[in-house]
Length: 295
Length: 252
Image (tube, rainbow over all chains, first blue to last red):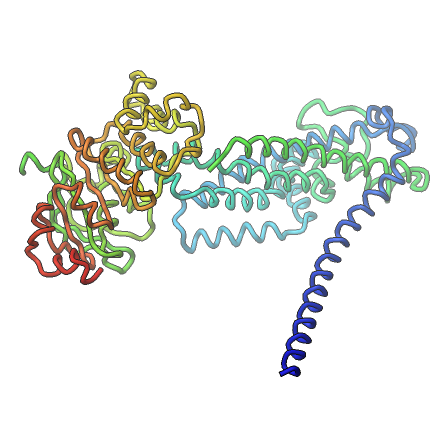
């Protein structure tokens, strides 16, 4: 009898031990991620903060990019990101609406969905080459904001389509039925009921897209980014400087790589800040919308 | 056709893919009456209800055979727009499903979008909420979210929303199965009131409810219409043995 009880206690102890071991592992994983993020941000701040000044963000580079600021690159990245979103978002949302609301589920749709997933897996440099061949050369847009935005727009398309599809599917079917049963047309049902309720989820996808569009280097290398231009773009057919490409240039092909080290870190810091800033705007809009929906 | 008949089915079959859900249904629904559709789960009664406003075609891979005649036309003929049918034949669902909008906008939504109604929307909202006996409870909170109402209130709102389209027929798919007894009683009273102006076809699992509120009752089993008679007759001395067995609780 006593033996049996002891046995049971031992088993419990063992189970408890195993449980805390696994919890510990999970906790450690979460901690490692936080540490990695913290480390990166701290390292960038530590190295880059010293060059940040009003002049740095408001003046173009001077002295073969070893002095001066990075204002044209900041503006260029904002232009390209906004351009990519204005192309990727409508196209992506429209595709997602077609795929989830209209298309009859079958072989064709499965094929398209596989295609979209493949698109998500294509390396970004391939997008860059595609943009070069297609928009820059074939359509004669040249290296320009337009060609870069289109390329980035296509790059973020799978992210936006995926998030939009999920968001549309999460709108309860009963809402659609209620609206259709009133004799409201399908398009109006989608426009008035489904889309407004899916919007916060769609915006989440766009936020991820924004992050990618602003940070990618390879797709804009051949399609939009200039090595150096002090003058600001006058139209969407001009090329621009962009933060990721500027970092790449300073770090690998600059005139004096060692001397520009602080500027490199400063530019990285600004890039991170710009991405976070654009994300923050989207998050605020999403939060506002979420507060205004209840079901 | 009898002038009292508002919608009639002739040899209707319905398929989900390869499965036949309804077999050779022929029946007439009478104007300004409450008709109850009863039968065990999966007998096809809800399927039949959703055939009448073409809601079944939202499901992929379904097929209808036979005629469903409303206003002298087969509602499934190719020149008929289902949107027009649904304006005339409203529906209330099993679970209250108000839109995540204000109470006011729940009612105004349909009339505003279908443009059939150019009259005073404020009046229409008040009138239909009164018809649904909800006005006194919500007249001061019309701009609040409909999601804050109780289940019973939400269901009456859904009825008001359907009435705002001024339909001829109101289809109800187990409208009280998600509600408490008091809310159920209110909806039943409301149905009694509404049948003066509308034709009501209601699916119910609750035999007492069918007996209480309907004028006519149709009993379905395994996709077949077993018996269709005056409610009184069905519940006192049905013609078919199966009906009696179901009603007395011997199976179901």
